[in-house]
Length: 332
Image (tube, rainbow, N blue to C red; front, side, top):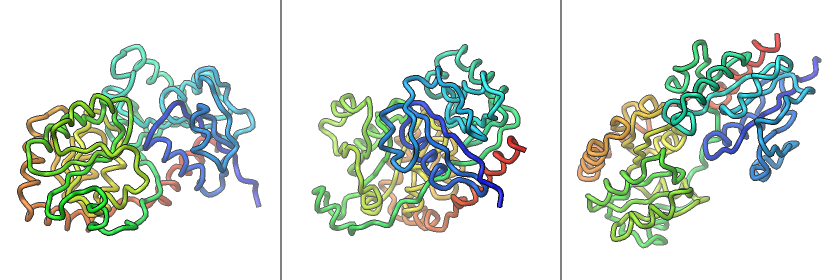
């Protein structure tokens, strides 16, 4: 039997969806491959306890691991490896829309550098059609990640713990507290209804959002390890992102049977499908009107919830298999 080929995963500073996807790929490599290790900033060491971890002060100064058969670079900072490596081959995954997210959104030279890196890479994977648009020939493969477990507590138990009346409509969001997520609009939308809002997550905008939620029924719950319980205790999900590559939190909300109100950033329109309402990114009045309508209309929530429970999404094993086909292409 032929020995498995070695994959080195490289990523820069990352949060949420990107690092979940990388960990899943590292834990479940495609058939015929195994994980050589993870090269990432020191603060991510604890996120990858099962693998050889190589702390990188700056990915920009990292040389490609020569004992790898393929280097999988996640994000544009890691993708710079493609500019100085012809061996081993480099697969670059675009996890964001470079025109609306991160530093590339504010810098034409950085966007040009990202495109150059993609041209020099042996293959490019994009997690959504939107993130693939700047790169001709990119493979569009949604991120693979482990589904959330079922709730461990009942709706009534969660609401009792949080002091939320059983009859009150709850609008939940799960997101990093970052400008890309548009959570100021979430607060404004919920504040114009008689609903209660729960925001699960942490990030650089926490203090600003603490001020914005004063005097409202929107609650900042911080980082939570019981997201399945909170989704099960809520009535609807809302996320007004202005920049998004995919939208894992939306997949999880729909999998929990929740109707959603989301922007059309990233892959969220495809994810929401018939289970939600979609507005343009940055359309605060449209988002507020959609949240207000869904809070007030229990029949509409029930119908969208029924569609959410019927939704089907790609199996993580199938997504990993497709990544393996890209590895095969560049190592042939």
